Length: 420
Image (tube, rainbow, N blue to C red; front, side, top):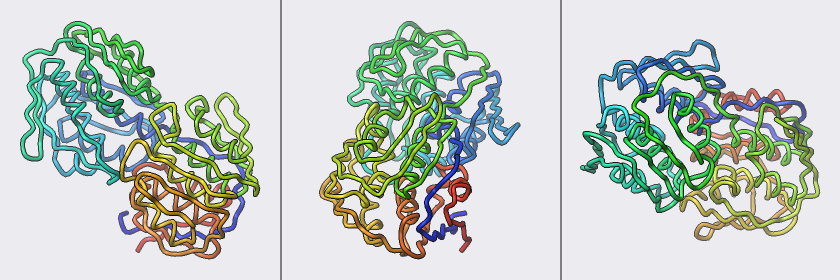
């Protein structure tokens, strides 16, 4: 609930095993992809998080039937589309809802959508989405707070993206899979979630190669069919627990993960001094009280994810020396700095760079989660702060983390959800 908060008593060394859920940023485009067929789509390893519920409401508003046969699966049947414009309040609540525009354009040749909302973490223009639709032959009409895209038929095209937008790449893929002829997306985003979407679409009958690289080739098909698809592990959740183990000096086994998606974080934390043993689908993290300052850049994949730079900042409050964190993806993702300072962190921001001096002894205080990952950073800081930390506005974290407090409790953290 929006009024809930986390109450944390710091000082515990996390120990044990934690299981990673399916990826938030992978399941949402796959849910949108289900609109491309009149047959049922079955998704497995689906996290039970707020963003999935939001996207389910968006699909239902368009006429799709969505149900959870099990706690970790979704069955989506979009045999009948009754609307081509999702409610503005839903799109404004979750940026990924904008993906339905590409799917509606691909299946029905038309769609209208509000400009997307989501976390306030800087400018995230949709120009690359709209330019991609136009290149495929759609007439794109931005008006007031909505945009309409429509076409009698879509045709393959060579599309250059001004920057490798993840959501933009996904939206253009959704529109292009049933366009006539061949499409090539140049300077595409290369994140694992892009490859995951391509895997689902190929399972539905699409012909996509190159997903996971910066050049994606799509041979259009006339129709798509049902598919059963398993969502990849959430590399951001896994990374958050890697940092949780490290910051508490813990001993944690992280399972059901995909370490090959986490090279940047693993290498950087080893540079900090954290011991990380990598298995086929697991990571064993041993914390230490001998952490070293580093310079970090949050950049597109395969670099360190922007979604993990705030949690890493919390860890670096305990490192010896001065660390620099450069945010290269979003221009307003350092809002958490003021909240981290309330806990006693010696951290300042200048432009898109955070400067962190350590080690510092943190003390409990009342702080606010300003977005999903900023909230995670504050929870991690609360795990080592002396005394009691209260983190409010945790509905942000409920959007992206499944049972966060329960998983931390299983590792020995003293954290509880309190309704206010």
